[in-house]
Image (tube, rainbow, N blue to C red; front, side, top):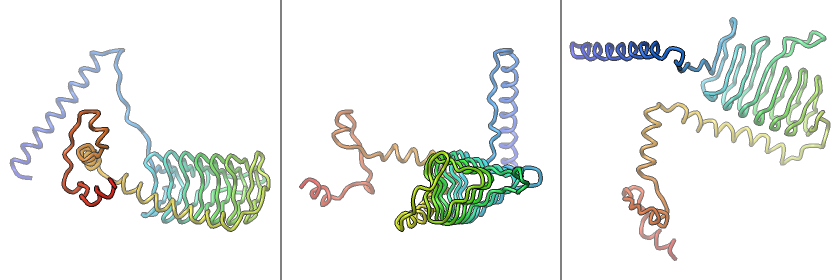
Length: 268
């Protein structure tokens, strides 16, 4: 850092110090009427004891999700907004290409009444719908857990099985491969069709692709986000009739102009 750089740094330092001093003085003057904004203590990845969440580089974890303790998230998997994965008294393992959708809760049990250890094991290409609750259970590959469903301790959802939305699966229930269970308590409803089995696999692929778009957007800097807002406002395209009602005349940039041949085809 040269002489000019050091001078600029020093000026900036004292300006910030002066601002902080004024804030402290103002706080004292406000007395009992003081309001201080507290920083959020939310951490997307939080260590607990000696356990550290382990997330593959190409997995997506939404910024408002919470992964705590002994949690592993496999390649191409996605943990969506508002999810809590709490691996405190046991471990949580999530395979590849799996999606845990918004506001879902995944928690473990140290053991059940008979002493059986109950981690969470979720396989590959699994879809867990919004606001589902999974507790101390095993969910095998290519399965589907509907929105708002609850799987209790010791439940095993076998490969290519489905739990309907809102179902409550009682402790130690095993749902065989190829079956749909639903209700409270959950019971066998019917066999899955070939189309539904294909849908389960496609759902996982769709969410993996969607997660890439969300990851790219969340990776943008604040400056980049603000710049995009300016561009959208500047180059916003409205219907001509809508603009005339507001008395707005827009100049369309050349790169956004519609060619005459397309205009004429639309008019015809």
